[in-house]
Amino acid sequence: MYAVLGQWQEQTCNAKRTVLILCALCALVLTGCSITTPIVIRNLRTANSSGATSVHILRTSEFPQNHIPPLDRTVTDQAQTKDLYDALRALPAPPSDSYVCPADFGEAYYLTFYRNKQEVFWAVVKPDGCQGAVLPNNDHRWTVGQTHFLSVFATALGIPISQLLQAPRSSGPSAPLPPTAGN
Image 1: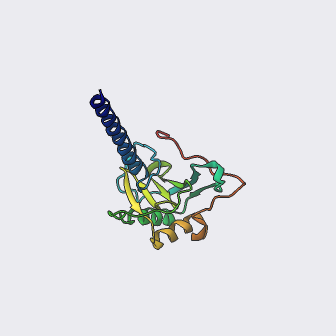
Image 2: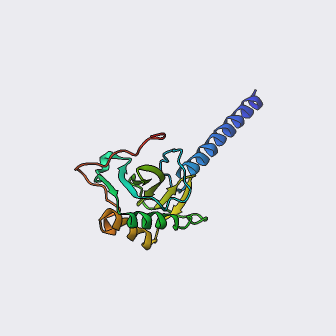
Image 3: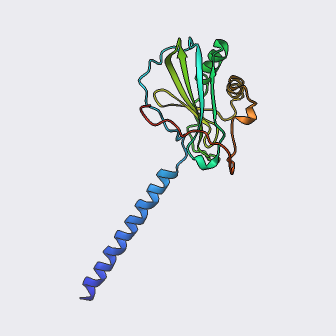
C-alpha cells in the first residue's frame, strides 16, 4: 500500500511541476517585449503612396484613466504629407536581439494618408513602450533615436518633439480609445 501511495505522490508532484513550468513559459511569452500596437485591419492599396495629398493623425489612449490629452489633426500641406510618409518608410526595422522597453501607457497615433480624399496608406506610431511604428502588412519599424522622423512628425502636428509623448495625468480630457479591427 505504501508503494502505491508513494507512486501517487510522485505522479502528483510531477503534474504540479509540469503545470508550474507551463505557467512560467506562458508568463514569459505574454510578457516578452515587442511592439504590441493594436492593428487596424484594412484592405488598402499600399503601392507608392508618396502621392498622398493629406494625412489625418489621431492620438489615442488604451487607458482612459491616464488622461492622455486628445489630438486630432489633418495635415493638408502636400510637402509635409510627403515628408512624413517618406520619413515613416525610411524608419529601420527594430533590433533583432532582445531589448527592454520602458513603460507603455497605451498612447498611440493613428495616421491615415489620403490621395484626393481616398485612403491610400496607414500607420500606427507608438511614442511610449517599445517606441515603434507599424505599417501595412504588419511591417514593424523602430522610432527610438530616429530624430529625423520625430522632427518631421512633430512639425506635421505643429507641436514640439517633447510633446509627442504625453505623461499620464490625474485628470482632464482623455484621447479616444484606439479604433477596433475592421473600422
